[in-house]
Length: 169
Image (cartoon, rainbow, N blue to C red; front, side, top):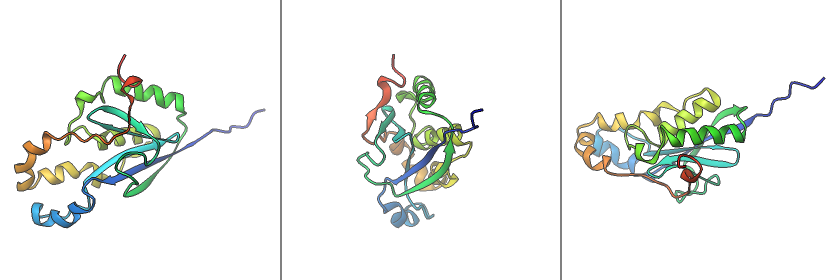
């Protein structure tokens, strides 16, 4: 009789500070509250870093974006989702919820994507201080003043756009 051996895969959250430390220094003066960083996140699984930006779902080797090495890495646990199932799931997301034209800096961004992938893969959410960042900024008078400008910004760390296989037919 075969053993009940199940293959599991590590799931990591890569966290980058887009401000490179400036948010920590300037946020008390500009926002009246301390922000540790302006977070960009991605999920690393199956030896691939996957993220969402203005070009849709993209991937690269872990740590391979122009952002360099992550500020820190969160171990989200393990999953039994193999590469084929994961690829199929990403493809369905790329055709619907996470098409490039659905990107919105405050409401539908890399962090909402990472959070959705984390829940699919592990049943766990990413840390709330990351997903709450937009509302933390917008809850300040300065954040409200900057909102029109900030909403016009699209963040797309260079990687391989997966749109060829995730979302475009």
